[in-house]
Image 1 (cartoon, helix red, strand yellow):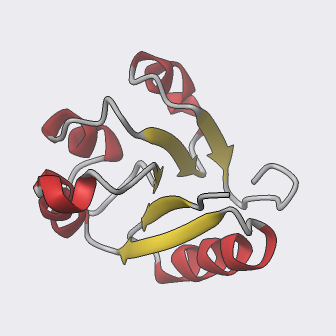
Image 2 (cartoon, helix red, strand yellow; image 1 turned 180 degrees about the horizontal axis):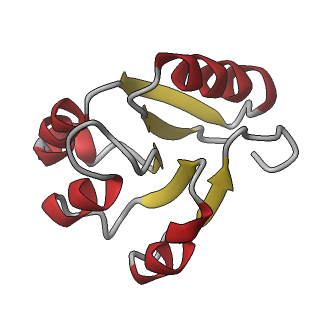
Length: 114
């Protein structure tokens, strides 16, 4: 079975480490292609069609020091991607529906939710 390729985007290193660990340990069907702690760098990566075209899933935080995860989505073509929001803020769930996210995980992320 083909592994789904994903990227992780969160500005908090501890959250990235934990999500990376959970995926590697409990999600054998996922392969992490890249990890980003800066929204702007992740945006540049995703604007590169040769890189973005191999990605299946984005695990995306919403609140960054500069802008939001929604700002990132506004700048890229994510029609072929599955977006999973990972945030401590439940108040953005309705807005996330407008972006057609496939899941909305509240931090701290529970393994059974992942």
